[in-house]
Amino acid sequence: MRRRFVIEAVMVATYGQLLVPSRPVDFVLPYSTVLELYDMKESAEPVMDDPEEDKHVKLKIAELISFFEDPLNRKKIERALQMPWRESSPLLLNDMIQFTIVHGIDNAQYGEYFDPIETELLLTAMKLDIPLLSDQFEFQDRLIEAEVPVQVYDIEDYEFAVEEGLSPAEWETMRDL
Image (cartoon, rainbow, N blue to C red):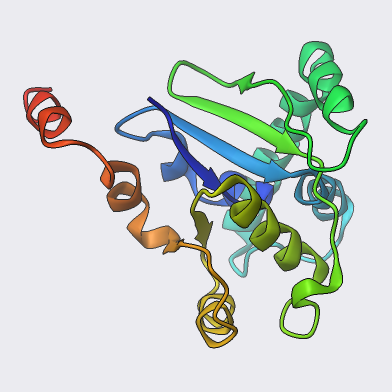
């Protein structure tokens, strides 16, 4: 069974370790975060502070955009965009990683605490009842302060998050690997 997480598309490009999980993962991406990739790719503003890291991340962003623009993947995404909160069919990167695009619709439910992208991430996590991965401590603090009923993991705890929820029998099997 795949472990599902709501995450921003740029984090997948930024954190390479996300693409080598110990068990299958489904990254659920609000479509607005996929659109952000295009802005980041074209922007002269750096994504990362270090110039070498920035160049590498922008290359990974371009690769992720190409993946989403693949004709089969594009078709799956376009179908999801026909209705609010519709999920795409799985976009398979490899046998361990798949993406699901969600056509989230921002609403003002948490507008005073969070920007539109953050709101879509929260609402997607709540609507699908799956945890959220984030690298932003301030965002995580605001989640707690606003008492948003969503489970959030820091990106540094990704492997723990992937393993959490395994039954004891699954732990025994994984230990043998």
